[in-house]
Length: 126
Image (cartoon, rainbow, N blue to C red; front, side):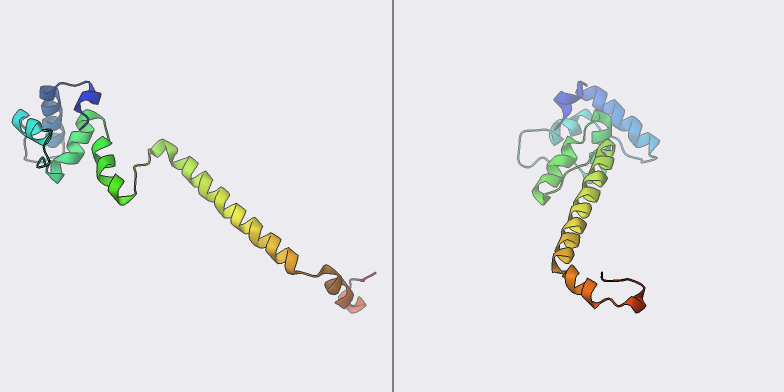
């Protein structure tokens, strides 16, 4: 998990997690033994779902969520990057609209349109 990257000791993480759980009003407690069991290098390690967001908050890391999302082809977007995502979407939509416009203009035979207009339309073809 992200314990090494957090710069915190395991006991500090336990303390932080317990403080967060208390602030959330959850009548749960985390122990050092639990942290150690969740982070063993074994396939069987499992962190209970209720503790995962608390662990991420305590370590200031979204790494655990990123690991969970990766097999689904998803990833976490930092809130600071959201405007860039919106800008990219807007640019992509603009390009699609420009392609449609170009295609429509290519289909229009402007000479035929101009020749078919009559003076009654108030527009002269001359």
